[in-house]
Length: 553
Image (cartoon, rainbow, N blue to C red; front, side, top):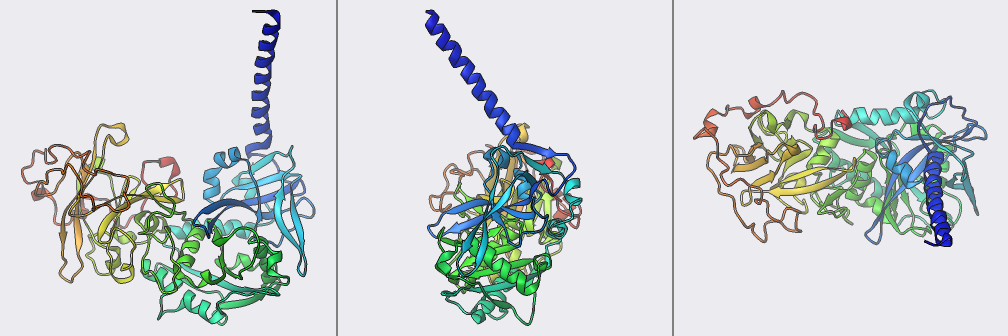
């Protein structure tokens, strides 16, 4: 090789090494995880980072990150805005995703500041966080956060939310604001908003939540005398974006009710007028936070409000076949542009997340033996026998009988079938499959690399004495406990699974002889009470051992 070519090759190698070193060092400079140091609030901006999910008018959605300002490097005072947009490096988000989803991500940005813009008629309003190029983002640990003078109530809110999730969440207070600017207001009045929020005689956000949870989660006005507050924000509506109008409204509310108002109420709902600039949104809310924002008449759509408030309670979206919002058995799928429905609830993973129905929920471990369980509809929770279940958890999968009746009569798909949903990416859910008596078998091969197959079969659909029907479900490894063997079907009905749930052939994994068991009549040895196979059903439910490091309660 000629000397000149050798020199060029050497330069290429050296350049590549320098580039790699620069990237690694830049990431290390930009992000230092779980920094341990003495906090000086004058050293920089301190943020509680929250995830915000926004539904767009074009059918899409957007995931953003917000800085709830704890203190600044100027005067260690709280900035009186709801939240300020912050653009964080993807590597930082990836490394701290669990803390973000759990509501536990606090950071300090030396030299960081909050940008503001002037809105004619209103004044300065915060827009986004400025991070100096050389700034080192410090992740604060739990000890450091607890030592801070500010934001203790907000942190306590996050801790209380986690405890409340373990108890079904109880009674939660709501403040609803109808926002009016100098030239615009929502096309619905305060009276109609109140009806769609709290009515007990018509379909409403609060009444449907109460029905879906059988009273374990209820919502009531923070001020019973004024369920909806008219809030004036000076300035023309087009002078605000969909974000800055929230911060402007936040300041007006704080001036009216006091700066600590957000530390005393569980949820704040903002009904915004049409005409803001920026993104064409339907609604958006903070995950694990307390605010939700609605465009114009969307504030009067109860299932839209339920969807956004569920984000406040820590739920993400309901996926099916990889499609966000695709699972329409759940409120966390596509919401409806209707003031009167649809009357439906949540999927099994959502119900498990809320902590509902513990006395009728069981966690089955197939490695501990076969189980036969009677699975009743959750809409009959108050009518079924004490040994029957409305929620079965197997590993990280949650089974419910999606009965289309009562307050769930308008469930949008897989009516009267058993649906199986699991958690996806910490906060979202994924509808895996459905089974019914026409297609009764669900299997997963080589569970946890053991060579064993999870084998779930619906044995029969039984009509109860008082009209409450239920499925008899066999759950175990490699074979079924159903009394009558059902040969595996080779081809599913083309109409059995609409919208193509991602199990093209649910029986592809079925064993050739599902009754390969020494007992000629396996059910002869099953106790009258199938719960005898299981741990005490009153024990607190745990997340599946599929990911033990991620157990939340």
